[in-house]
Amino acid sequence: MASLGQIIFWSMIVLIFLFAAIIILILALTFSGPSSDVESSNRSTIANLGQDVRLSCFLLLPNEGGAQFSDVSITWKKEGLSGLVYQYRDGAANLRDQDPEFRGRTQLFTDVINRGNASLLLMRVRSSDDGVYSCSISSSGGGGSVSVRLRTAAFSAPTFTATKDILIAEAERWLPKPSVTWFDFAGKVLNASTTFTQNSAGIFSIVSMLQPVTKRDPYTCNIQSTMVMAVSEATITGSGVSERTTFTFSAASSVPASNLLSIMTSVLCIYYLT
Image (cartoon, rainbow, N blue to C red; front, side, top):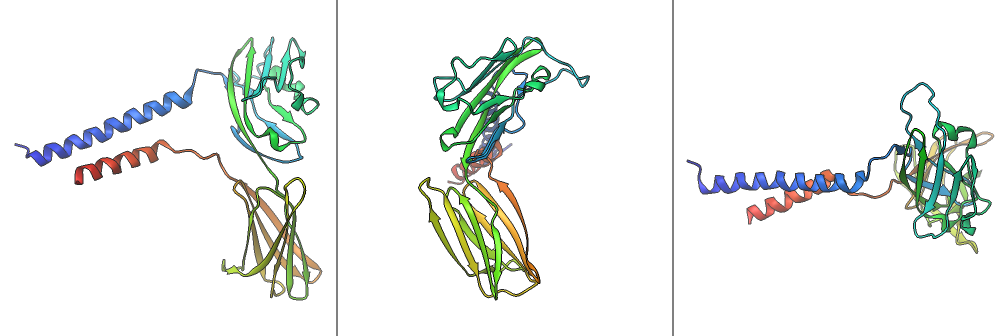
């Protein structure tokens, strides 16, 4: 016969899995939303201020045979905005209800609309463009809607110059204000002198000086904000500085179901132990 402790132990195990199943079901219902044939290749996008960005939205094709759609209507909206971002109807743009904020800055890729591509080109991105956008499509082959989160930032690759034993990195456009860290070829953090200058638009320019440096040794300069990181590798050569920069972008923050399950398990275990 099972002891009282064993009964309590197995009861708690059952409760853990029961609570986990409930949490996963709630998350699935919350994030799945209604059935839709519309998708986006990037539901969280970071745009560089002053440049253009494409917000992805497309109607899933029923097969791979190059199917096309007729009677396509497309509406782009932005959360919290009364006017429309863009509307396409009856084979042409319908901008009567377009919000003035987007006038002259939006367009669709008209040559692929009949193939279900409703992606929006947003030009000359502003900080006020930050927000959640919805793309709705209706057509002869189906329809639905999808949301795209757009975040705005400023970022640029640094340029490098070398003078005697000093390596200088200069980057013109960063927002939010980033941090700058230098590393040697072995990954050791190096001391450097960095200054930030903010213009009237709030965008930061950066000048960072590393000293002393030696020729032919590679150095890495990391410029990182809360949304973007630029990793630059620079090597002083006989004719100047060889450089290469790659960008990585932060994903939208979220709490995975596995984390919630772990939290729930920990809470129940603590409860049992006490």
